[in-house]
Length: 236
Image (tube, rainbow, N blue to C red; front, side):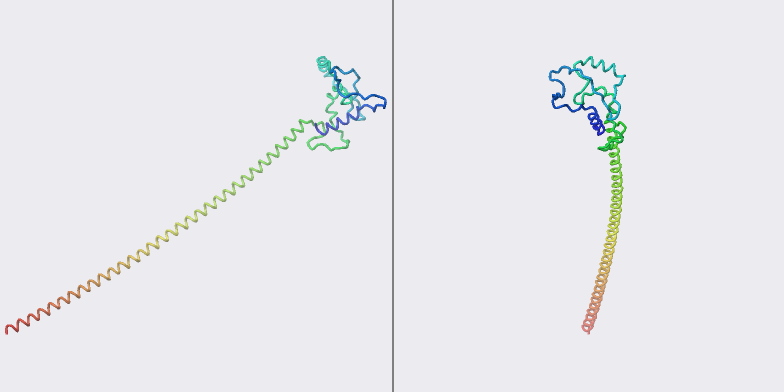
C-alpha cells in the first residue's frame, strides 16, 4: 500500500473508532468467534473519509452483486471488528476517496511517485518502471557513447601504429638499400684493386721475361763472338 493509503486508513480508524468503554464493561473479543458461525447481526458503523465530512454510502449499482455474494456466503459478515465495525462494502466502493490525502493534512509528505489525486499502487509501479526504463536507456546511451569514443580512440591508435610501422619499414628498406649500395661499392673497389694488382704483376712478369730474353740474347751473342775468335785463331 502507498503512504496515502496508510493515512486514509488511519483517518478512517480515528473517525469510526468506538468510544472508550466504562470501567465496568467487559472487553469485547477481537476477530471472529471460534465456533466459525456468523457473528451476531449488529448495525454497521458509518464510515467517514474525514472527521468533518459526510458519511460514505454504498454504490447502488453493486447491490445486486452484493446480495448474490451474501447468499453464497451466509456465514460471513460484511463488517470487520478490526476496522472499527465499518461496513466493508462501503469501504470497497469508496476506497479511492478513503485513500486520497487532503491537501491540508499534516504529517508525512506525499511519496515522490504519487500525484495526490488518487494514485494507485499500480500507477506508482508504472511510474517507477518508466523512470527505471528511462534511467536504463540513459545508461545505455552513455555506454554507447563511451563505446563509440573508445572505438574512435582505438581507431586513432591503430592508425598511429600503422603509420609508425610504415615509417619503420621505410627506414629499414632505406637502410638495407644503403647497405647493399655500400657493399657493392666496396666490392667494386676491391675488384678494381685486384685488377690493378693483377695488371701490375703481369707487367712486372713481362718485364722480367723481356730482361731474361735480352740477357739470353746477349749471352748467345757473346758465345758466338768467342767461338768466332777461337775459330779464327785455329785457322792461323
